[in-house]
Image (cartoon, rainbow, N blue to C red; front, side, top):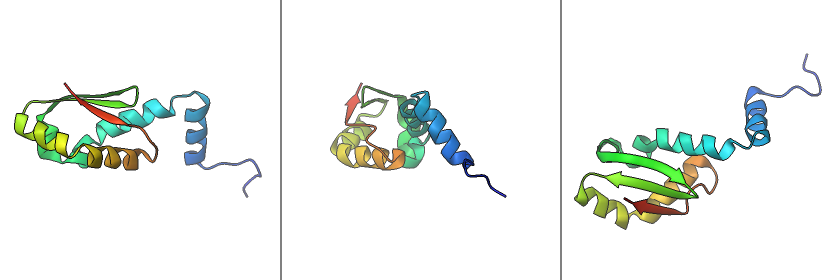
Length: 96
């Protein structure tokens, strides 16, 4: 029998992340881990550096051709990242 104050594990983890104010960092780490699923393995293999800071995604790509394609697809990538995080996590992409 469930008690009135019982929560699911998912709700308890969400509440803990919000209380400790680490939900945003958790979402950023999740997006970095899901990078191959977001852009594909071929692009992910050519990504040398990837991190999020101040709502900006910083990327270092070793191939100039792929970098040019990603510049042209910037808004679609931002939309995919925000959909994956279920919140506005990234506003801009900076290519290093």
